[in-house]
Image (cartoon, rainbow, N blue to C red; front, side, top):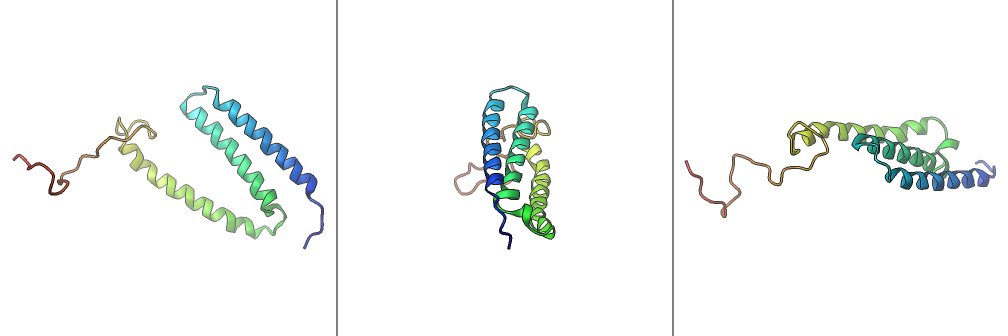
Length: 122
């Protein structure tokens, strides 16, 4: 077990998190386009999360094989999100257009909704 004093590192990380929070608020007021705002927001959030994981969760001071254990679930999350993007794109207003557009109010389907549905006209 390490007996090193990491209090200076913790204070530096705390300062960096505070500065990045102020940057996040400032950047949120800028119009960099839809994808520009998303990219910058996710980039800043990733940096902040990395600082927390590395220093406050002590991953920086652990053996390297722990990084694989931590990063594997992150990879799975990206795979799950990526596999759902095609479906998200098919349910937008423009169908096949913007992946983040609002979904249709009702998804049309061939069946009927149940006993209260009006009789089908053939």
